[in-house]
Length: 404
Image (tube, rainbow, N blue to C red; front, side, top):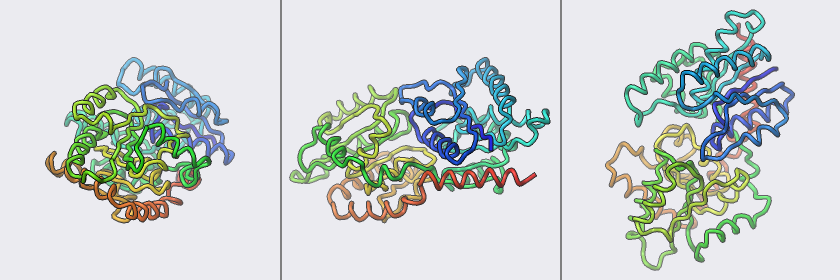
């Protein structure tokens, strides 16, 4: 098959890693793969370099950006039309809200108006929804209207969690028969067994942790709604909660973003500079060592399709603490970690207290951490394998092509 993937930008992120692994897997399976993307702009790091070495074709549309910009968006549409006309792909597979809306519109017009593109199928993956309770009412209405229209142009919609399907259908986006859940694949072997076990100890040593310290890590962009402020505030409560002779708890934020200075200031104001470690961006190849080096993975994002860091930590036998948002409950339960109520369901103080108590519970019980880590590995080992993901995506393509 000739398959064209479209994504807005290849920064370091879950949707982007998913797309890269999909393109690599489809290319290995003998498909003719093209990846269309915009510039990898932003402080989050980039995956464009990896894409260019994947063996498949990469097309960069300079005008394709995340922000709404009528002039650039029209130029993006023109360039996509040129690419689709040239390739005449069997499948156009879009990712991310912006690229998904524009590319699906262009592809649908082409297949209706030009016989050479008449057999083209359109597939979209929802990695996370643009509309959510923390967005303004007006923006949500606009996003939902755009997604409804784009869904009508789609032959199939893939979601990375059942929760995404439920939320999309509840908003009136698409029909149930369009949806398939395919969990976001990853290179599971890298997390199951470190090629260099010393890398985990090296990471802990690089942070200057005292002997016996419990390391609590969050891996995410330093951006809004990722919950870094909650972790800092919970750490203040934790300091008062734990006995003086208990092993010290240290926190590590892996990632970068435009809120870094604000987060550093809040840590300083809380008097916890010695307990928090900000690594900045780390190459994806170092993340398995980070997961093995951590005693607890905490993920306090307020919205997330299904954060890849949850199964990544579980594959490394690291227990997880997360808010019960979107797809988190599909991997996290009382056997694999601690699932906290959604942050909007309790007062700010109640939320922080529950988070601090959860961290304290796992920090104080090494055997409980071991049991949860073992259960998490068992749950995620097959479900999140990249080969499983690629095979299921191929099945969606074949089903679309069989349906006329």
